[in-house]
Image (cartoon, rainbow, N blue to C red):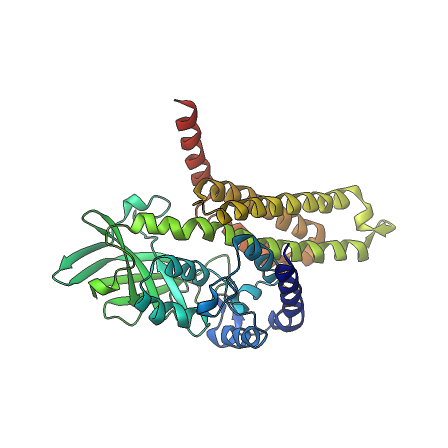
Amino acid sequence: MTERARALVAAVETFIREEVIPFEKDPRNGGHGPTDDLANELKAKARAAGLIAPHVGEEWGGLGLTHSEIALVFRAAGYSPLGPIALNCMAPDEGNMHLLEKVASTEQKERYLRPLAAGETRSAFLMTEPDGGAGSDPSMMKTIAKQDGNHWVVNGRKSFITGGEGATAAIIMAKTDEGATLFLADMETPGIRVERILDTLDSSMPGGHAVVALDNVRLTSDQILGEAHQGFKYAQVRLAPARLTHCMRWWGTANRAHDIAADYACKRHAFGKPIIDHEGVGYQLADNKIDLKQAELMIDWCAGVLDTGAQGTEESSMAKVAVSEALWRVADRCVQVMGGTGVTRDTIVEQAFREIRAFRIYDGPSEVHRWSLAKRIKKQYSR
């Protein structure tokens, strides 16, 4: 841990405890995530503290952290489900910022990245589709972009679009003649329409998760992100680090749930002693410590790989599976240790349980990552 990272983590930890956690019971924090009004209030506090979007480069208002430093800061931010929103490092915006930094033109960065990094706008990433379209298998893409002179006409439907409601801009993936292409578009572009907001298990991301229709959306060639037909390659630029940053944020939330459950177990008595002294409870908390430490080490190892400049596809798949399943065990044990209290909203333990269960699916379910890793193993040992 560098001195810079040590000081930043301490500042984030203090900020989360003093400025963010008190808002967890705010009525604006609802079933489809916190409202933009609440999110903007939290971002303003982070901006005043010099903590807004620490992951982006200094020229865009961030701190230019390495992946290893990001791991430390994001874990600290995740101690409250509202923490990553306050620091403007929540999905999908964080992943979109990373992709824009890597791929966007100078003009596109000024128009989309700068206000996004400043916390003035929100964004969406339109890849996943309903009705047998692209999901874990992006080759099933049904959204089509047809070239018409200097324009492209996009038609299709997207689903599970995090933050679609209320987003200012979107990165849209569509199938083109030679692969797939990413486009940048304002959400107010004619033909882009939010059909509905899905009622989902989780409730931490502003705007919830939407179904979005794309009806004859006309975009210019200048709105292509990167080069045409390179969409699948660019998606990996975004998705591999995004899997890991999910792990970082939810590690913080799982750690908070563990702290709450451990404190409860030390204060709650049954059969003449604190329930932590009963092996059935104490051992569950001990297993939590083991899972949290193993997940932390996996995150730091994968972040170190990304810091070498490697794409980290295989490593991020391993981390996504190992960390999401470890944190799920932690959250599940916390609910069990706390009994009836664990399923109430008196604490964030029940929310941690819901959020982390959804995390096992988002950015690729464990089964798909295991399948991908098995393919790599077969290729390695079949030489």
